[in-house]
Image (cartoon, rainbow, N blue to C red):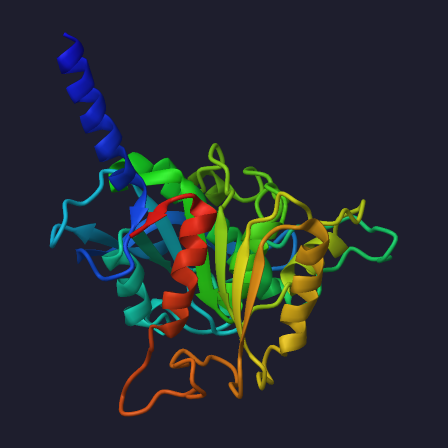
Length: 334
């Protein structure tokens, strides 16, 4: 009996690490499932509160799952949620480089590449009470794109958690990432309060909230940001009647990549977030892309910032981010 117990214990202890392991090199094939509905969101002809002529729209994502190649696929894997850029007013899932999607999935993560409502699709915008900073009840124009975008990302996070068993995901190991607006939305998801961008409207006002898995939380454990800004954190705080700071020790760790010649989102935005993180003590790792402007997906670490010869992506930033993500998720990297 003791020998049997020792054998079972050995099996358990040797098998368990594979359930919490990422790989430095491509280790798995990847299967793709397209056009999965993760929630619905209202699209309104007049998006200002209380709104008119609103119709629900299915919000879609693609799923990339590791499959058997060189090693058995762990039954439980971290999740990586990607969100495309485009200023929250244009773009779709194809704006995320396929190479980045495959990078993370082939190393042991389940990747969810999402679409979300854009500026011309915005739904109801909640009326906000005045605070000491404002004397009106109006949303700034930017909210017409920002509010639904972050709300939809949080809905996607909760979808992943609600379906964790189905997709073999560990709901406590979720990373969000994106480029430009997608990175900014991801940063907001990692920093803002649970109810921010989620519960400003009631299900009576917006019935699509019933599809957003509000019984789950939208907490994430890591953010991988490509040229982001903390502006959406400031905006939700501005409309908080109590003006409560969202920067705290509970924020998700961030690794940020940002070109020092970015004239779309200035690198000063990254330094501003870094300053807040230095105060809270949460890990924030900034990688300055020397000589690079906005959207330098082909950065090679040696000064090459732009893609050439029909190439759309270089893996250097993901290679750099991988150990940071593994550390923040508390998983092995082998």
